[in-house]
Structures are given as structure tokens and as C-alpha cells.
Amino acid sequence: MRKLLVVLVLWLSGCSSGPKTYAGDKVETRACRWCNGSGVDDSGEGPTPGGACPGCRGAKQLQVVIPGPKHPAWVKGVVRDLSKLPDGPGEVEVMMEAREPLKPITGALGGAQVRFEKDGATQEIPSSSGGRFKILLEPGHYKVHLSATGFADLDQELDVAPLQEPIWAERAHLKTPEKDADTTYYDVSLTPK
Image (cartoon, rainbow, N blue to C red):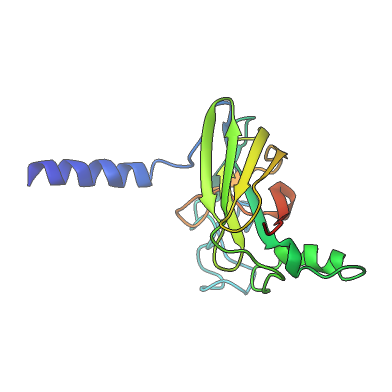
């Protein structure tokens, strides 16, 4: 029982210890961007207009992570069956649908394995039944290997851009934001054997 209590205390202290940082990140304290440092919800849109700001909970300030060169960034992509893609003018629209999370993917190829290799380290993720995948990767240059049953393997290269925007710790949690400006998109098609 005592060990369980110690583990629970350590876990809880880790949850409230502030933003997760990586080598090269800097943490700054800034005026809350929602209330401009007043601590009051004067937007009229929050759960308690005139009450505590929902962003900083009345603290007036928040911690902000300024991402360093090793802070992971989102890579979002789609794997498609090349034989099911349209030819001609519809091509651009097909490629843009990957940025709309609820839109079905033309030629979606589920169960494809997408492997990223950088500096001897490997990370692999399968595409969902809708052909999509999403993974956090350290910025840099990757070799990418794609494979799926019944399709020719494909080897490519991909540069993952570093995060540019600060990461705000809000509403008692922090995660790497999924902003378009800080997301690397990777749309690829495999050829049936």
C-alpha cells in the first residue's frame, strides 16, 4: 500500500510539474494570452463571464515553452492506393483532403506500415483504416520506408520542420499543438504489385 501511495504521489507531481520540455527548449512566464494578464474572463464566451479566466484560471500568467531544435513536431500523413486516384484536375483537391480530419480519403490504404529512420533510430506507425497516420518526430531529415501487403515497397526522404510557435500551458495540461504552421504533411501513394 505504501509503494502504491508513493507511485501515486510521484505521478501526480509529474502531472502538475508544468510544461514538458526537451533539450534546447526554454520556458518563459508570460501574461495570459486569453485575458491579457487581467486574470478575468471578460470575453463573454467563457464558462463564467466576469469570473476567472479559463486560460490561466485567474493567475494572470502562464508558462510558455519556446521550442528548441529537438522539440518533436507533428507529422501527419495519408497513405493511398495509387490505382484508386483520379487523373487530371481533381489531383489538387485529393491532396488537400488530408488536411481536413473528417473528410474521407480518396484511395485510402489502411494498414500500411510507415517507418521513419534518423541517426540510427527508428519509429514505425501503421496507417489507420482511413489511410491516415500521425506521429511526433524530432525535427530533421528522415529516410521513410512504406510497405503494405500487395503493394510495392516505397523508400523516400522527408524533412520534418522544427516548431516555430511558442507552446502555451493552458487549462492544466500541455501537449504539442497541432497547428498547421508547425505540422509537416506527408501524402504518399503506393503502387499495387
